[in-house]
Length: 249
Image (cartoon, rainbow, N blue to C red):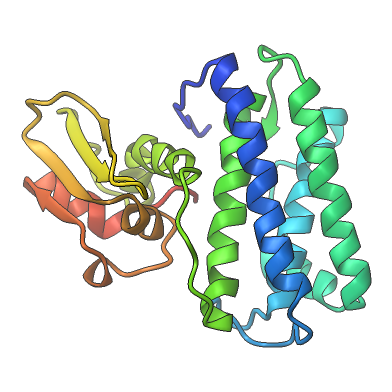
């Protein structure tokens, strides 16, 4: 069972929900204005339509997990097959399906009691974790679309949700790489979009990571290789983390 380990309060859940909606709306505006959804994205074999179909399918899975957890299938279906099926739909139908699904997810997660867990990918999560998880996935797949269209993307404070997941995903990163999980503390210092500093971990930690929040988020979502970021590491384990960083299995 995967332990995501993220600890969010009810207040943070309520603050993150509008950010989740805004993230979807921003990507919606971009793809709605693009007539050719057959353009290939950085994900091998995936077009813009595949990216949107994947997000729509994930939202549908969240709704099943929340509403009828006994019907949720813990073994994920092949993402390529699911995305291809959705991408085969007419563009207008797929766009509407995605819009309806993400609106339903936002409502369901808003109304769900904070202490009520539901199944998700080999574990159990609550709304406090699922909100940033959906935001992270929307942002990451959105980045693929921005890269495809060559559109500059303005970073926002919403990145903090993605960065927090990235920091909490350190154990997951080492686990997925089949490496021993370091036990000593880490310090992460990131520069936010407005020049502010976001920090995690004790100030005196020997293992340290510094850089821009944008590059950290691009790295942990595996949208950029380490060499194309401004991230720096102090300590062998910190360097290894950046090399294997991820926020999903």
